[in-house]
Image (cartoon, rainbow, N blue to C red; front, side):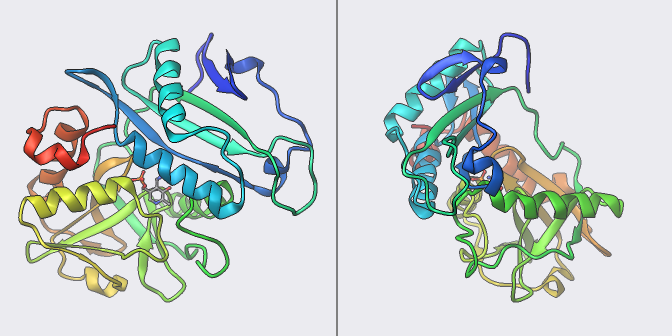
Length: 300
Ligand code: PMP
């Protein structure tokens, strides 16, 4: 992530990333009390374009509201800062990570009355690689939405992601697939999950997942192509007889899934609906998709 002379945006200023500091008493550091986004910019014929910048920063606003953290910038300002930061680092195709955190020394469990914003950018390949993944159902569940607001992108939730992913890799799989508190398939540690059966797509509904912006984009692209998408609860047993599956996320983009435990999907990923949608997704984010199709989803 980090190269010499990397510039980050910290508390209103562009600074050398390695010069930024944080109090040892920062509330966020101790309690995972922070919210963030994961955003990508792509090279397009119009230059570097941040994909769905507005949607990401609106979700950041939503996350801040959910945890009672003031967001010191407007969506417009955040978009502007993002482009400036890309430019200062000479990046056009990159990952953007804004984090809203409570840096003020505060060891209490009261919501912060003020908050801080940092933003970093770096070049990042597809974070789950580009080979189809072998998934395993995790012994860890996604956090119960009655315990924490799971639709907000809260730093502390990622402890669940880290331990689930590490546990899956420890058993020789590429990634975990987590169930919700009722035993329904929810999502991966950092990506949503879809499977395909009889030419239709299935994915978990809102409720115990992060409502991925990539997930929404894929649902739109599928429906525009006349493919039925079901957003409904399903158990791992529903994967029997599925022809394919994939995961979606800003960092992961669209990545094939070859198996979930001993359920192996028979169709090679490149021949699945998921692969078709992955190609449309790439065309959309790089500004190469026909305007009629991309009108709803053009980058802000
Ligand atoms: N679920 C989780 C738990 C995630 O961390 C992410 C990545 N932000 C996603 C789903 C996918 O969300 P998006 O498509 O908005 O990146």
